[in-house]
Length: 140
Image (cartoon, rainbow, N blue to C red; front, side):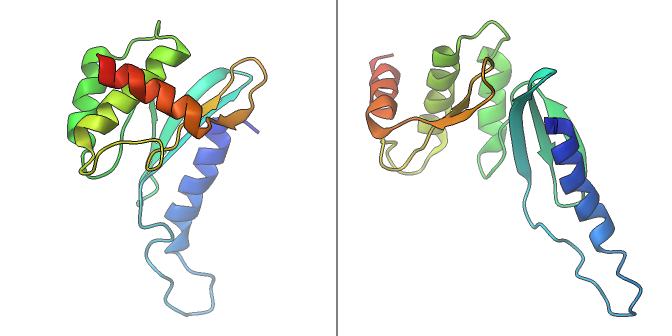
């Protein structure tokens, strides 16, 4: 299944949830009270979609959501480009998190996951790998 189909299905659920099941019971208005970022690698390549509680589907090359998304997205617009290596993308992401997080960023309060474009598998970096990237962030 491709990434767009999965995200579209999530959005369809959000849109149709409020229509009810014909029983006359009033349905809840929103099944998901949050925005979601859904990323992956499929036959079309890497992709990133955002779904909001209303069921709106948006496609991005880079995107942030959450309480500090404006500052994060501003930095992404300035510094992200399609030629970034995976390591450069991780460093940029951690640099942005460092700027917007209220507490000090560390390998114990941040997780990093990556999806390989070759085998399309998700992998979570271990604490040592995250610490190494955080060292690079601190060094710049």
